[in-house]
Amino acid sequence: MTDQSPDYDRATALTLDANAIAGLLMEVFGTEMTVAASRCTHCGNRAQIGSLRAYIHAPGVVLRCSTCTGVVLRLMRRADGSYLVDARGAAYIRM
Amino acid sequence: MAVLNWQIVTVTAIRAETPHVKTLSLLVPGWQSHRPGQHVDIRLTAEDGYQAQRSYSIASAPSDQPVIDLSIELVDDGEVSPFLHDAVVVGDRFEVRGPIGGYFAWDGAAADPLLLVAGGSGVVPLMAMVRHRAEIGSAVPCTLLYSSRTVTDIIYAEELQRLNGEDDGLRVIHTLTRSQPPGWTGYSRRVDMRMIAEVLEGTGRMAQAFVCGPTPLVESVAESLVSIGLAPSQVRTERFGPTGG
Image (cartoon, rainbow over all chains, first blue to last red; front, side, top):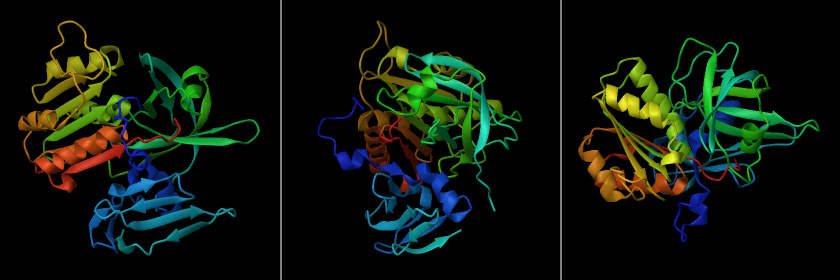
């Protein structure tokens, strides 16, 4: 984007909202997940999944808490077509 | 359980909105409508099997027709948008799945005033909300603050002007960041905290905000809204970062 300031943090510029990967979440969980509530293990913040920060340029997808930036969910698609979900950062997901 | 299947769609119309944005109308057999703000995933498959996938917001309001409009900005070094801009013609077919994403959606059920803030083609999902609001005759006050580079980059310019004139409940406020035509009466700078505060003045603190655009704009607007006093839950964001176009 040419309209961004030159000192703009590149990591911030690579951030998306988890709503952007709603299709992937639906593939993995089989239902609409962006309005499901989750609780961050690190800081206790409760938020809808769609409001988490999504980093899609890592191997797999990393969803981070919008409050403390701790990792809430990691999703990876394996070569055999199955998915690996690391949910250690979510105390719960209500769906 | 919700099902998300890829299905073949057919391009039924192509319209140039601005020099860099085209709207494709797609016939989606069996389309079960959508909520304004939702998106679809598009998947293109090359002859050698290589696949590229992108998400695009739906621009049209929900209707009983199996047709949706996607407004697509050309990203020069992108992989998908140049194809959709330069190669696709009416009658072409490709794969789509959706509608997707319930988080960034407004369907007219809530009574809270709407504050929509758009940067560039971030206006697309917000336009679906504006169109839906007009079609259902909603009395919910709605303000759209829309940042574009120049006046020719304003997507849906005529329609927004018409809707703004027809409906006392809708305020469309433009800002042009790069150049302004003679006699321009809108804002002439990037969206900043002062602008957000002025716009919010006419909307009220009870507003539900939807912010969509390039990541820097979204971050700055969301921070401004929260520092002015909106709860984080009142601010829903959709950043389009560099996903490769």
